[in-house]
Amino acid sequence: MRDKKYLEAIKEFTLMDDTFMTAVFDNNIEFTEHLLKVILEIDDLSVTKVTAQKVMSNIGSRNVRLDIFAKDSTGKLYNIEVQRKKEGTTIKRARLNSSNIDVSMLNSGDKYDDLMDSYVIFITEHDYFGKNLPKYTVERIVMETGEMVNDGSHILYVNSNHIDDTPLGMLMHDFYCKEPSQMKDEIAKENVKFFKEGEKGVTDMCDIMERLMQESVEEDKIKTIKNALAEKLPYDMIAKIVQLPVERVKELAKS
Image 1 (cartoon, helix red, strand yellow):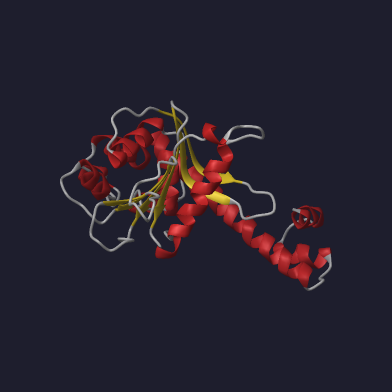
Image 2: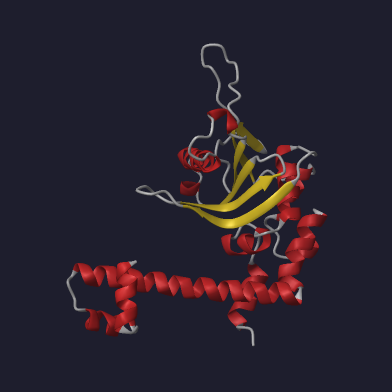
């Protein structure tokens, strides 16, 4: 039996919500390809792989989690981030994501020229640059000459509040729609409808929310264990606090 609170949450979700966006785009080549074509205004683009919430691990430094990570048939890599909070849209975060994607492309011994193009795209709830434009393309230039440096690294900011009758404007309109019937882009409508009204889609969404809930509880318990260990509490006492077997507490402590 589906949890009523999950069903109510599904009704309220839009593509601007992280949980819903993750479910809709994960392994969804068609919709991801369509989104990239509209944003980049490129017709000749064929996506071959899509992963949502991809973690890029870095030994000795901060790991990076990418909302949507895609690859096309030419080897170009794409990171799409949907951000509602201003602090999540800083240009230095875009730089960090871009550098991590670049590092992931090369193995030891590969040549620098083997680097393929990469795109980091932020779809933001707030107009990051404040110029009321639908999107902003960030590229490197030679300051003294104004000439562009085509190093293959591209950063774009999409202003989701700039809604008009262009393909991008209509798609951004749809990112805020709770009801599929109100959506203008047919591909967006079809995919959102699957997860809001389709039997399998709704079941998948409920499963995802249940898993995320369990992961959140686990993370809270790990924080409690960490704090308790810092206070030098014994394992048996910590086990009672977090309501887990002592052996499980020891496993989590090691991790």
